[in-house]
Image 1: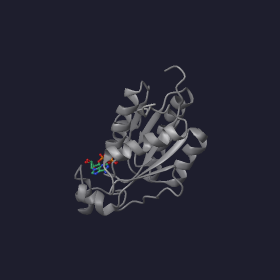
Image 2: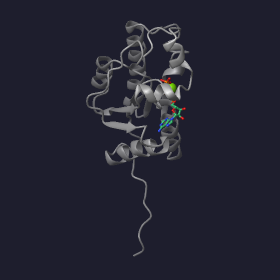
Image 3: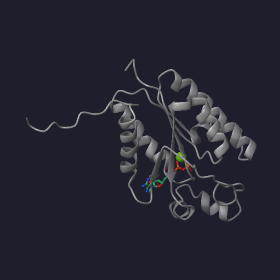
Image 4: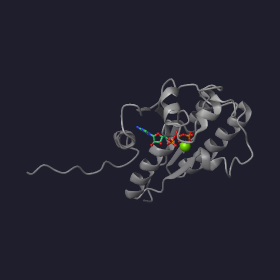
Length: 187
Ligand SMILES: Nc1ncnc2c1ncn2[C@@H]1O[C@H](COP(=O)(O)OP(=O)(O)OP(=O)(O)O)[C@@H](O)[C@H]1O
Ligand SMILES: [Mg+2]
């Protein structure tokens, strides 16, 4: 796919909102179409590119700026990217937006703190409530909702597959990926 368009699907949302889950489905669907999509998942990035960084405002900002830097390099060369990190601060997300301009697609993976706490996939909310984790987004650290995201996926109302489809539909409708051929009605 030599003429593939680069873009960055910038996922943002609370821990447990579904960023990793939905990004994997979108990744798989795009690969099936021949895309060279790359995923920069927060948990993976913190083990290599941002190894050693903590969760202070400063370290979080550094982490997100690094992710934006790599996403920009890839997407400007025609490689689509999904970033899947909490990215709690509006200002730094907006920096990423400015850097990538019309290649930047903000995806708010939406779920309330209550829902995420109920899901508590990694057991982190329990630890945060017990005071074992300081600076936990949504509990003891801020999360600034996007004001004007290109896409909002309502994970309390739809399945991960539906959210992934919503994102693919957006990409098609806005010319980032080719529309799949729908079954033609008989002539
Ligand atoms: N509609 C939904 N969309 C996405 N995930 C859902 C949905 N309903 C339930 N879930 C569950 O919520 C959990 C989301 O966890 P996931 O690891 O994807 O979150 P995350 O946003 O990547 O969190 P973190 O920031 O901690 O990495 C999964 O266990 C998933 O199965
Ligand atoms: Mg995740």
